[in-house]
Image (cartoon, rainbow, N blue to C red; front, side, top):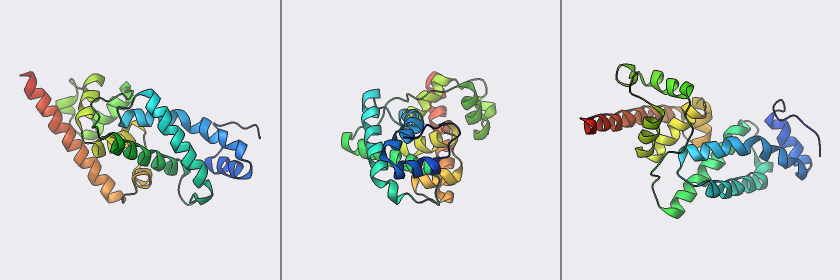
Length: 194
């Protein structure tokens, strides 16, 4: 097994190392375990134990399909797509809509959401981390996921397109609809406060 620095090593090189010696697959796991855990937590309401089980399935699928990885794609998009598909499969198994949003929100992410929504006049003073979590929890999964990928995972349209296997135009439409849905939910929230 090689000794490598995960922060400087390129994904394609990690793939090559893992294909050369299966013991090197541990580097892919080490690099992606925490980001994928956060991603799943942000788009689902699964308990930590379920997320760990789900990620185990993800890494098994990645390992089994590593030879078939399309090098024209970004590896991160590919592994996020596999994770996305596992989350959807898990939802189908449990047939329960998530009721809470467990992702972490910091002030920078909150500012990104506010500024891109162009709703600053409405949201500037009132949008808190707790409220964003509440709004996300009430959204349709497909809309919540695209918002999470864009604003929390900071993926660009191309990467989101690769992950969701949808054209960039569809991604833009989903983001637009997600913003509208969030605004509708926010307005209902405001009405309930009156």
